Length: 160
Image (cartoon, rainbow, N blue to C red; front, top):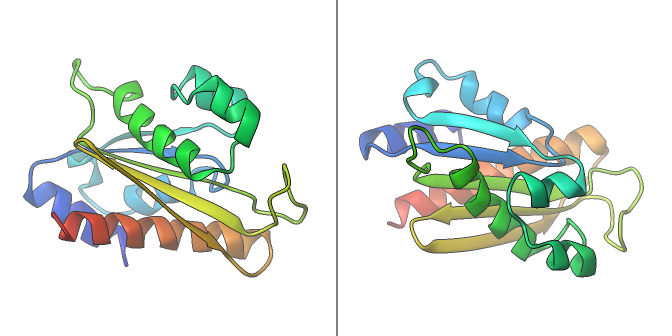
């Protein structure tokens, strides 16, 4: 799955995309920005690495973050939805939001094993999350999270 395919689908339907990242630290946004013409679709990206930013910038429920921690399917969905609003252009929220959250390793976090990843997608009123436990070192987990996010986005957009 490639970022170019995702951008082509969005461009073809006249929709925009906003990206929220945690463990991927900008890699997902970079995958899109590398594609010529991405600016016609991508409104921007937020790297909310600190848990508090997930609440203050992306609007993730503070109680959810306190109880479940940042590596959670509902957190991923709320990040994806929140980035659409956070990166609104001229008062118009982005049409599609995608988010990554997880544990890149080498150590676990909040009882979650290294390699645990959640991807959230928000399109219209639909919110979904897909999780995986990815093998490998920190770099492999982060790259795998980008691949997972692209796959989930492509699958979601094609299913519409």
